Amino acid sequence: MKPIWLAGALALALSGMPARAGEISVTDAYARSANPRSGAVFMVIRNSGTAERLVGARTEVARRAELHDHVSENGIMRMVAIEGGIEIPADGVVELKRGGRHVMLMGLVAPLADGDRFPLTLLFADGREITVEVPVDNHRDAGGRMHEQHGG
Ligand SMILES: [Cu+2]
Image (cartoon, rainbow, N blue to C red; front, top):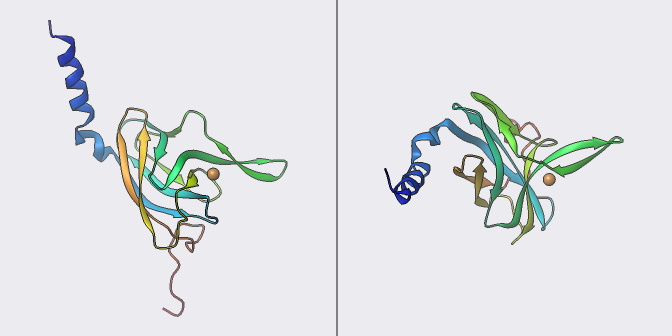
């Protein structure tokens, strides 16, 4: 019979292995911040593995990072914290975008300015963490594309 500590060590080693890391990829991450206290992060999350759940996020640039959604109440849009995380379906794509789900940064340590970049760590239900570098881009259009130069 294996000693219990060995099972524990093995589980730790497995959770730190990059074997599953390729199954979730994050692209097109960017942040907007309209005031010095808060900001929002948007991105596209692709999952080529089994169903997964984004349960939280953390970053050194804000005291709190929360998963938010927009809901309409009596014709007024407001933001609410998402209970239970965001499902990333097997072989699915989830887009965090303007007017929809996003990672809310609350209590910015310092104001975010265009061109700043910061690391954001996404926390998943199975314990894995994926850190992405997020550029601040207040001029990106709502479709998530970079503004293109006119006359080009
Ligand atoms: Cu929000």
